[in-house]
Length: 115
Length: 113
Image (cartoon, rainbow over the protein chains, first blue to last red):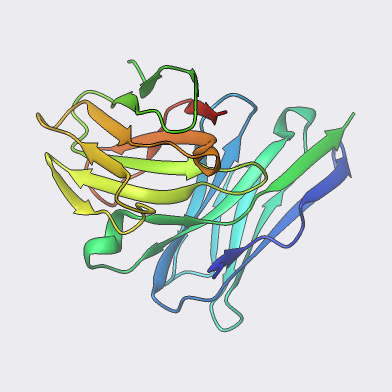
């Protein structure tokens, strides 16, 4: 049962253009969402997050949008740079209880930004 | 300061053997997490500790898997009677406390032949 889904295994964009990565979730108990970036042979690194009480969070070139009614979030990168090429994971966290610390990840999307 | 470190970086073992994977969290971080990442998948939660105690071990696949954190710092993930399906990258993360940003180590790549 995949509670967090990233349906696009890969995305290729031109440098300077916008990259849009999508993520869908099924568990209504999720209240906090995160995006992680991963380079080969390294662990994931935190990129940006959003609480369920917001619908948008922006940090420099990165913006995350949350549509709670559709259980959908997206990460926008603009302008895209070649150094952004990596695997991007969407993750979600439960509102509370013993599972509060647990992150549930999607399968990842490989982003390639061409010069 | 130093990040999360994991040893060994690579481990090759034979089916049926016992392995231990070690995680050194960021100093001062009270929460520690283990995840497993199979090829083409995202990290899958295994267990997390708050201090010395396992707060949630619901992700451990079966009783061949066990993790400890006896002094609230270093943690060891132990796998008994390894199977080929255990082959994956095992990731460790730590955070200042539960719910804070999780910082990941580079992982241990386990290969069971």
